[in-house]
Image (cartoon, rainbow, N blue to C red; front, side):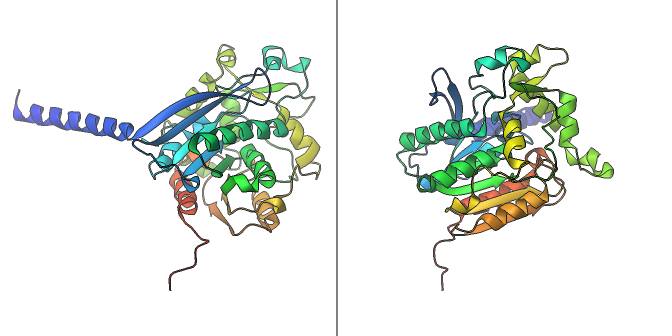
Length: 348
């Protein structure tokens, strides 16, 4: 073997070792939790630094997903070598995600085994709050803490916001990415007509919704090459029943859509953000058409009882900026909020 080939082999082995070492620094654990209702189990994933032995309230985060897709295929999808879950964990955090029933690896209610029109919408927001409550209780008991940080995306902001409004004493900080509030136009997830138990989404539907509102000259550069495909492959594989259809589909409970019609499009909010009494951070992107700008501003104004509040608006991003070229702006802004202690007096 000549020196050049030997040097290349050593370099390749070193890169492989470094990649494995980076992976080894994070521990992953998975759990199936009993929900508050018989027969329903909830999938929870945890990542934290290897050797981490102290788990304090300000260093624990729980994430919940939005209306259509599971938590793990966005929050823990490795793009450019790292997921958002891993990014937070690498900063010394004990990080969790949960799938609400009907999503991802959690139990799918029996209504999803039948044609959608045979049953009314399932998994309303109130039910999702119960599922998040079960996950939060599990984490607090597991780590021996009274509070944890909460992070929600889209519908997840409603779930986490409503939970916090009822359980301020159990929440350290609240992060709402793409906050939802009263809307003045139909949701992109609502196609009209009679609602069945669940709806189906194709890859083409998902991509079209993702790019809604993006200027034509920006569409080709917004999502780095291969990222949409990586997300779609993981997400549609999370529904084995839907994946067997032609074309493949993802099934998603319609409870959130029913709540949208009966509450958010009807001027009847499910809860009052004024009841939130913990530090709160809102993150939003410029081209988000699922939860447009006016929702961000309206929600921010209603946070009248937080110790402090803040929002960031990310340019050139959509509702799914978590998986776009400007994702690190979101990660860094949220991380700064989690890391800081703004309640301490400034040093003189």
